[in-house]
Length: 286
Image (cartoon, rainbow, N blue to C red):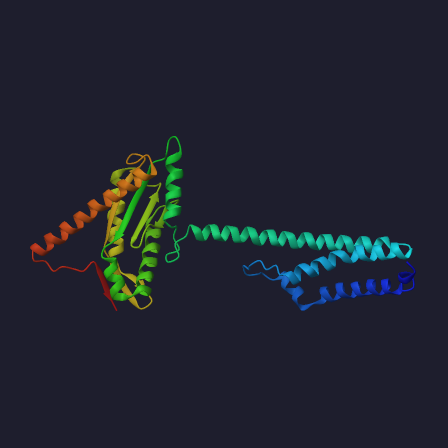
């Protein structure tokens, strides 16, 4: 086209400007951040960024089209280099986007199975593990313990939500210290915890672990400004001997915990009748 042929110098200007822009991008201070460890970040794709990407991708084809229209011999190597660089940068950006999406998906999956207060597994994660354990043809013997903190509502009302959350977190840490390798400790409810421990293979051992847990929780839990001990009731059973299905295992664990609660109440009544001094289920020492 005569109109474009008369201004072919504009094509050279566009080429020169593109090289300048590439050099400016390479020298920008933000390029140093590529070698730094980045914190988890969210994916941000704005219309402006998409427009800039489209402009960068179209630079090569626009220049090539202009040269063909004006009848000039095409500069194949610069176009090839610019196109290859654009493709490589686009692939790098796409891989970065895919990595961010994968990290966000994994993080959301972890959050969906984690209790916010204690950092332990939540009930959903616990039930999933229980289902996988019992779904196999011949499940390995595994101890199932259900722990309930005595009068935790009163502790919450007396000491406040913040301290109550700190107590729950400290209880979770102590339970993790008491369990064997490969055990799963989860918060099952407001004041209850569950343990699946493959190192427990019979009812006698489960009973001993239950006693050890009760005694361990009676030792003071050291908080930043408070020392607290709690009393717990523990129900124990061994799978699959005491339950071959998840629903049945959970039901029998609740029954075992109810029996433990009944023993706790009977023990408290016996102490009151004998005239012994009655200790509160939670002791706080400032």
